[in-house]
Length: 289
Length: 211
Image 1 (cartoon, rainbow over the protein chains, first blue to last red):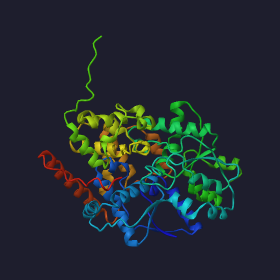
Image 2: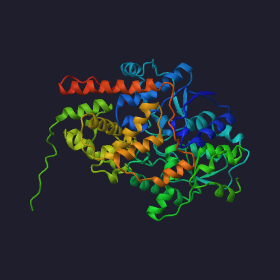
Image 3: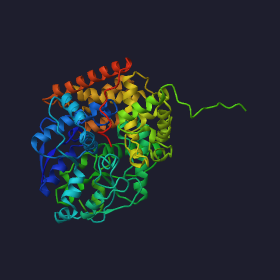
Image 4: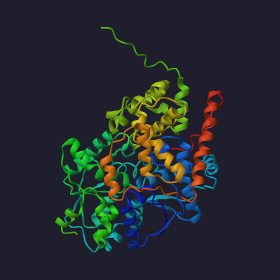
């Protein structure tokens, strides 16, 4: 199993621990990653909020490179994945639009490479059984709320690999690691990522709702698959507590960090020191690390 | 008591052509909306919007272009696509919001949420210059254009200490080709605006690519 790897900008800045543990997990599971050479930013929400053609052209430049490599793309970031899947979806049966995109990027874009999220590759292509077989340190006693956020599973016409309202793929992976997952209401509620800088007040409210729901469901921690979700839920958790006079102390993991931990990788290699809510205390209490 | 009479069946100044244009650009049928309100019930941002997503759809249908493009809704929409996912009429409401934002910007409408527009501009400036997002530069650019100098200083400093924000941008080898993408798109957009002003038919990409 080999993929063209698209880390995206966040995995080179705020989320280097997601990048590192993605590589670790893929190596352990025999998923080969070849980074797309000289990849550019997908444009994220800002591009599609600005100009439709721009929002297709930026991911298309990367997808055209993956075509040259003869590989499908895997993207760990939910936003990058969504923009790529959207580009493929919109251009797939539209030769005129593909032509326009090719003209803008100055390269042939055929639309032959698929784009998958890392969660899809590990949960569906590799599968929980293979994952379970690699577990050396089961995450016994850890109760997690699997948080998918908005862009991994929506809209279903574009994503379509897991249920848009009650996805299960991450829950199954966590169960395979020996952890427990909670049933809860906010699996796919948006954290408001694109407004995090400009309307922080809104993001604090949305983040509070998600943290409240996870806490009420009895979770010890949240698990996510998106650097923006992690930045809001972890990085802004202190501000939420201060604003709303609440107390959560809920660590927010990338699912690849927990996979690495269960695969027996030493905890100091997993980037926990970069979290605002340090998860090491919880892991210690649970005698996991 | 005197009440203001609102004629909700009359068509606004932009007429049905507006809904047709929005639908064509968004790749959806704006006339399909039957006002059930499912989009607005599920929208996590609706509490902060001046018009509910459902109401925006109605404004579009009625040709009330100014009201739609001057709303806070189009900027507060976080593009989570809960609306699109749940619409029983398969209207791509999130795509309609994108279309309205793009339209408001290129036609020079005042932004109801200036900070949101400033963020998008600062973000894309970084991508256009180096090929990749540059968080620190984006934040500084945003602060300079909004004068929100002291907002988020705590988190910014924490992230700098945690090594989450890079001091220098990553510039890709092909950054010129990315800049070129922005240039070409800008030129095409200017041509499109000129075409519309002169009343020539729009050369959008067609609806068949979206579904």
